[in-house]
Image (cartoon, rainbow, N blue to C red; front, side, top):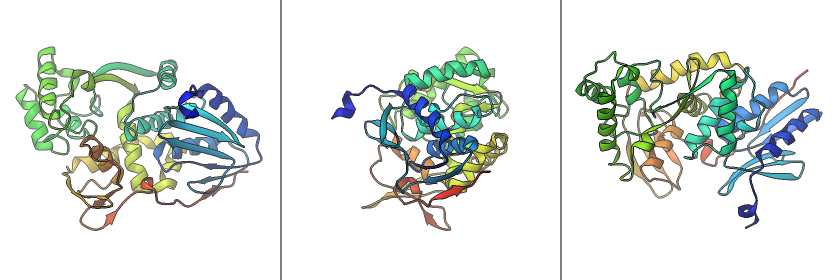
Amino acid sequence: MENFLRDPAPEEASKLISSIYSMKSLCIRGPYDPDFVIFSSLISKYFKGEIGVSFSSTCDVTLEKRDTGSFLTVEGKEIYVGFSSFTSLLPLTIDDLVPMLAGISSDLILYRRKPSPWEENLFTKAQDLGVTEEKSLKIPGYREIPLFLSLSYSLDPYIPEISGNRENSLKLVREIGGNEFTKLSELDESQLNTLVFRLITLLVKVNPKVDREELVVKRYFFHGYDFLELGFASIYLLDKLGYPGLFDLALSPSLFGPSLEIYRESLSLGFSLDMIEERNRYLVNTSLASPLLAYVILRQLGKKGKPVFVNDGNRVFTSRFFGNVGEVDSKDKD
């Protein structure tokens, strides 16, 4: 019960993290999710000694996500972080801004939560580094790609009949007076209101309580990067590349651009979901080759408490996120 009585102390956790760089060697353990992978990657970037990253072994530095929030333990000292991502505890720098945004965004999506006060404050500080904020539709990439593609790429919210369906998405855009080249910014107020109304009409099939406030939200951008899309792409890339691939990607932020293109290309093929609920799992027949992205969608459909397996026609597979033990990866630095 004491965890419910403690106030979150992310600032104290951030200071404690800074102290670990003086260690000669370091082992970090955490959950198998994009936030922890990116966090551990950025720690390794500046750590001078030998570092190991684990999802199962006992380590001096442990990061845990529990029902009551996140916890950081360093050499026996435990700090309650609250509902904040681990990546948000790292120093905010221009060099690490893209992977940090990706880590935070992925955490918001996977754990279906709103930004914590600590993260909201970080977004405010990030505006000094070039991050911009606007209130707009919660659909990915709308600054860079046509509206119909942005709608069809939407996974949270998952829009029945639209997500994964380019033809229906384009039909909707044409019905409000647009075409295959129209971008969200080109809609007038009447068109935008009509679009929001049409989307709510579709979304009530999934969530009867949905309203405009859940569709029109704060959005963050950094140059050509969409905060929301960075999160989705990181989730997908953890499934596609595994822990080492996302770890290396966080060390080379310039590669996030090409990686986003790979992610968009996978969605551009379209997808459908044929879900079978079994005793110990959800089996999803889909071309969306990511158990974690399927999981994000199923959570919105009220499905939870079981691991998600994907059958893409060639194989049936899942993610270590659902409890499989990961291997220890290590890295030696001069």
